[in-house]
Length: 457
Image 1 (tube, helix red, strand yellow):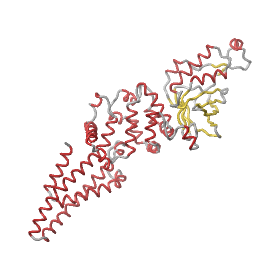
Image 2 (cartoon, rainbow, N blue to C red):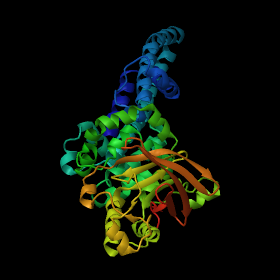
Image 3 (cartoon, rainbow, N blue to C red):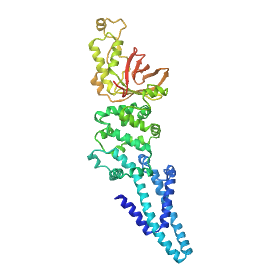
Image 4 (cartoon, rainbow, N blue to C red):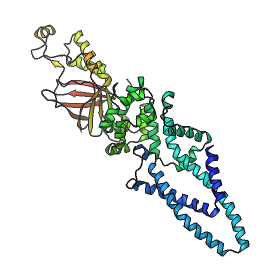
């Protein structure tokens, strides 16, 4: 239907005008296609383009540049056409003029059909990125009915283009970049998986992907990924709200407009990120590749390994009784589901509900010390809060700061400047077999074992 409408309209236009005018339109279209991308970059300084930053990713600047240049071409072709017509009319003899009129008429119809096909491909190229994104972010049937008509129509036309095999030809005239399509794939994957039982795994993968770590700890993305029933963005995904509603979320708009964040994201290999989110494995950031490239092996995300950490505490405090062991295990199990330690090239981030700003080891009451046979300065662990209290805390970035490497050992400092009194602790980090030993040197050498996100148990 769209083919008949577009090609038919241009064929009729060629029939009503002439070959000379259609030739000018054809040449002008080709020149405009060449120069429109060059003009798109400076266009925003002179006219008001669509407000939402996503329209730039869809190629709105190139589209507006094409419209402006074509308007200029059409305006300039009018006087040129009149001059040429006048010159031909007064130069050719009568019999030659009749032949010219017939040829001009046939050329008009022919070029009209060719231009119709060309503009059909141009229209398909404009529709394709929007239709592709709308297809990837297809919501529930109820939410889809509330999508703007343009989005639904673009998705339908994109599916029709694929059925007819026009999608590959349309890409020649597509104003969007390859990264846009990668981003649409990633967004679609997250849209359909950041819910239910997949929410924790996919959120952890996002926070653990080395090139994304600093980006995901910027204000807007922290708000968008905050696991809470009050997070309207994640609740919208959970309820399969339509993409239009999600794209107008304040923090989505803020993230798209944040130049620093966009710069960080532009350095991400989108194909590798997609594969990592889909499979949990990155060809660019897996441990073997990090070793090969002489990059720090701790890059990425690490999750608390409760059994291994429990063994560390039992080794440090061998006089614990069964009740104290149970308390420590329950404490570790309470903080583990949301606790993640991640490392970028220069900074670490510890996210979760809680991490103690003091050593768990304390001097026990005298009767307990006697029963355990402790020395005068002996310590036993005491958990700082019950699991029920910890479960009520919100997930946030608990600690952050720079880290340094000395050979195969890494060092940093955990600081709690707002604690009363302010606390800090020197920390030593050692990687072994996809595990990370985090030793709190000022907290009685207590050690926590973290497992690389996505590694086999």
